[in-house]
Image (cartoon, rainbow, N blue to C red; front, side, top):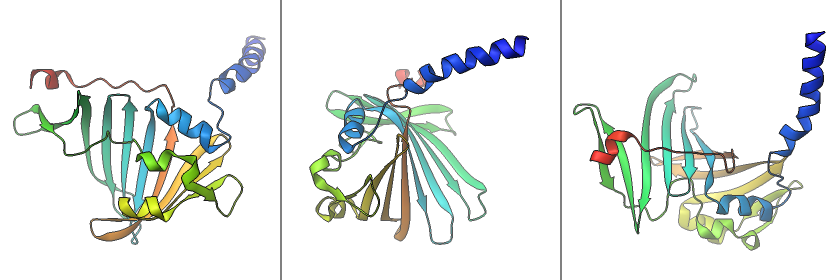
Length: 197
């Protein structure tokens, strides 16, 4: 009897849980969500030998947590590191952990935008054109080439957005897959030790 009641309650709550997820039906919907600068971007770079590098960026407006994982061609993790990035006034700083000193080190970054944010031209729907499938959009080469991408396109499917591209990483051509999620739900707290550095 209790299982039946629990199941009934879950069935009633399911539409509420589903409705909490933002509706993405167009590039405009997607770019409006990105404007909030609060989401998770997972970018996977796949080498020709099937080894890969995965950047998971948790972006929360003026700061981000970046997790870098490297995998060999059998899927075994070979390296992992976490850094934090924060915007302070006009500058961007990175925080990395120094294991020998057992402390976080703050350094000014040479980047002009936070990781996980797309170049401005990449968030303009007018710079895309329909591609092979329905809800698939190719970014004009005018905007991919300066970012060292051979191509980049977005696919909107089942309320999810995935980007696909080809670029150069460590002087080798790689496939790139971008997955976006958790819009408006990301919270990033800088490590306590960074506040003292």
